[in-house]
Amino acid sequence: MTPVELSRTVLRAVRRAVDEGELSVVVPARAVVTSPGPGGCGDYATNIALQLARPAGRAPRQVAEILRTHLKGADGITDVAITGPGFLNISLSQEVARTLVSEIRLQANRYGHADTLTRQVIPLRVPHDTRAEVVADTLVRIIATQGGRAEVHHAEPVNLRPVPAPEDPALLGPDAARWALLHLAPHDRPRITADHLVQRESNPLFRVRYAHACTRALSRNAAALGFDSAPGDVSEAQDLLTSLAEYPRVLGAAATHRAPDRLARHLVTIADALLDFQHTVLPLGDEKPSAAHRARLALAEAAGTVLAGGLSLLGISAPENL
Image (cartoon, rainbow, N blue to C red):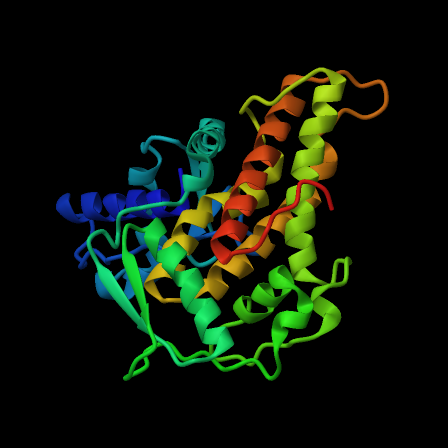
């Protein structure tokens, strides 16, 4: 279950509470679902009860208790706890994680593609500027993932004018140059410095490409040890699962808001979660490969697939070795 799907589940719980006369509110268009904050628990949390408390004329915890009853019976949800003033903390079945990994393995580079912009032709009118042209070129691919078609023109009135680069980024090479122009929001001035080339943790481009290369190395090393991947229980990798589940929403937002920087920053989030997790994938010492190792390898490979797909949309290569 992705955060988008869980948001819909939360809204269905609100709608049932309204239909049954337990709450008298207008059902909102969206329920915000995030990772639990300090003091929270479970896989995801939502502040929907706090949002509805005032219009419902009730205390937030009372609203949360009503919604908790409806959420506990939903498919894929194993527990719902209330913390703080009325946050709903939701725990999901491990089958949800297995389904997410299987979905990524099945869809490969098409994971996150949708039809929200189907049949829409989106004109991108840009100035004759390197950064504007790179952003527009990237948006053509990102918008296509949502079923739309972007047409790039050098014409007035301009509707896509990111802050130009202070100098020619070509000296950085094609991959680092594109990252330098894309990973910051269009209204921010890009930095054209050698920092984008250094192979260390301070460089987010390096972390993303290194994380992808790590997934390929894990697959090779697992094969040498005589085992392969199989989706399963990976409850210890919630940050990575959450970031992968969020990818379709982020990709859709990058297309809708003409913001490839959202995709670039989310790839960094996935990479950081993967790098924190990857040391648990292979057996250590005399340890024999188990179902847990196969499940962790499947998750790592799924993350590598998403990283490679995201880098491809940005026009950046994803090396097998780094």
